[in-house]
Image 1 (cartoon, one colour):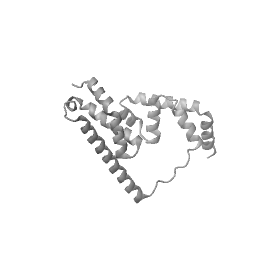
Image 2 (cartoon, helix red, strand yellow):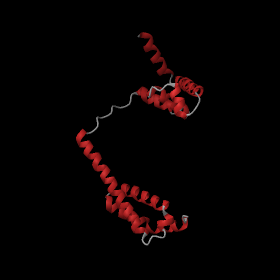
Image 3 (tube, helix red, strand yellow):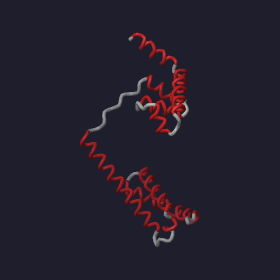
Image 4 (cartoon, one colour):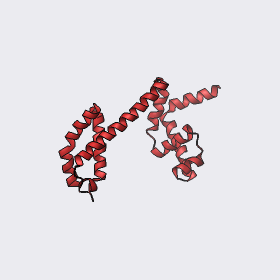
Length: 169
């Protein structure tokens, strides 16, 4: 069983030293904070055993050092991949219609947003969406219908432009 009070005492007595150690290891204050936080989270999960360890602070330092090494390796692999492929192309700024659509989507309930995204972005059928979300087909149809209606109400100018464009063609 974990003893929260003894862990709190351990944390208060070692947190600043661990952060200084993490900073010395990484050279980056924010990275050090992330590593130390993860190390303390791991210590809490194992506090029942770690409290009896002869040197829990040394264990924590080892965890911080290993996490720093893991992150350095990950960053090194990422840089190697980047050097092979080159930097990513610059993404163009979002279109005005795209910004308006995202703003309108944020006003929909999450279930309707999810159904619309799965249907239109992933070309999933109503049956596939129902299976993935574990709801009846009728519920998915309702979400799609209500979502479309609400988007039409939120984006009347955009819907009109789309309709006019299809009438011309």
